[in-house]
Image (cartoon, rainbow, N blue to C red):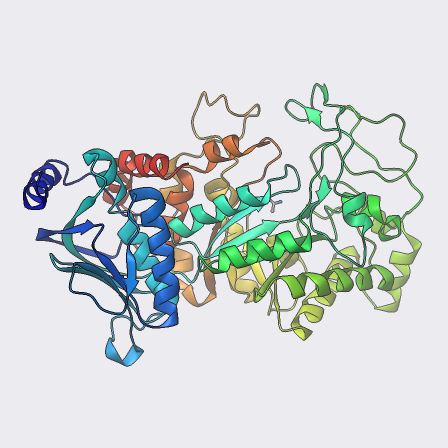
Length: 543
Ligand code: ACM
């Protein structure tokens, strides 16, 4: 068939499937126009400067792996083209927000325009969502028809993150990269990597090799819903070398994503204590676990990595030796992660051992602290100051606000609406909203969901989309952004992970991108109506 005829048939086909693509997160403005742009093997990507060329390479890789088109990247061309334009801020007032972009599709060319590299990257993300259904539906490999349109877009909040717990279950580097790809496709910009917890320490620290040699392996894992009906009686482990970490950080950076490491303290650190018992207030005591759970590996005689889920009393001591240990760990973490933020946990700290420990009590006397709550603030403030001295800002879970901690710390709020309001007002901290009843994707998706053994609350797409916090809209200076979380106690592998995150991750991304949008039924219905296209796209690109 000659090219003109082919384009004619493509156009007719397109008219019949005009609604077969959708762009997520929903762009702020999208204007459809008549006519089509036809992308074919002879088309070129136009790029001049480094920020354009890096983005051009990303786009070309996508087109090659998903649309069987390998285009030339040129400074100019006579053929149809996709032109990447990184422009000066004073050339466009509408694009002076850091992450804003424009996408203009005309019959002759596609112009993807922004004032920053990240804006250009987001323009590409919107552009590629116009492609795949076409390629699949038409079964045409050498040309793809795209409707003429104009998009102008920008996010409402600066921080749009997704968390992953790799302690309860480990995900390898290639899975982490696929997870990061998902974030990038959804224009999220932070990956919060929960690297340490009671059930496994997963980051190599050269000064303390036992953290991974001992702390990354548990002798078994409870089976079934907590407290469990037995134990796997099989060792479970895995960790990232520092080279692995650098690989991931660089991979993410190419996708405009900053990786934030989380090193949990002073609680949730049984794995670290198993490796270095001096971290505990009671180094010689054996690891405790709930009576109802089954333990693998025979009688316990010393500290061990936890095999069950929950909150444990054996926490890090508040001594100078232990604080220095964490400073050393953070030194290596800081060297690996260029992120301006480091997460230090701070949630669910049981202070019974501090109450019972002479050394903890002596520190309280010396520092004139009235109770263990003050002692907790002392511990957290020490880390905030240490990180500040290294040019980093601390993030902590919202429990750190039950104490008096330095206001430079950012608080990740996972508890209730009431907490969101009281904390943001009373403590003057910047906040990231990660409310567990809206943004925890380890909740079940629907009634009768058999993918999980436990009865967590149901969290539907509509529930996520219903999250609307007028209070934070009014106090937007305190709102850094939002984050979805995935805790993996019951998510042992990649397939199950995908089941939990798709498509709900996209709803969280939309919430962040469109935080200020009126949260009416039209917003929710529009999202739900386009789910088939979204899921077809995920399927098409290999998820
Ligand atoms: C948390 O879910 N414990 C932060």
